[in-house]
Figure 1: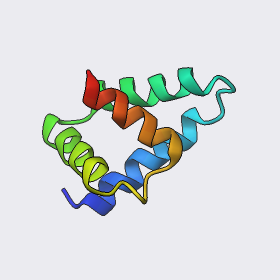
Figure 2 (figure 1 turned 30 degrees about the vertical axis):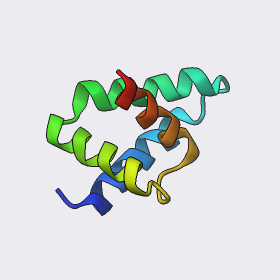
Figure 3 (figure 1 turned 30 degrees about the horizontal axis):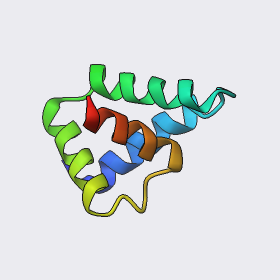
Figure 4 (figure 1 turned 90 degrees about the horizontal axis):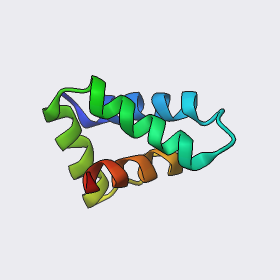
Length: 71
């Protein structure tokens, strides 16, 4: 899958969870959604993008991907 598509999808998920006032809880929601719903290859591509650059990811998604990477 193209990384631009993954970035757009991840940021859309982040936009949804960003309504949560507790940003830690919001980041956990993003991480859990990606962990449960995305194919492992998609997750690996997103994590690799985050590690190399990550500049197009929202701050919330960066936190979530960092937590996903650590898990």
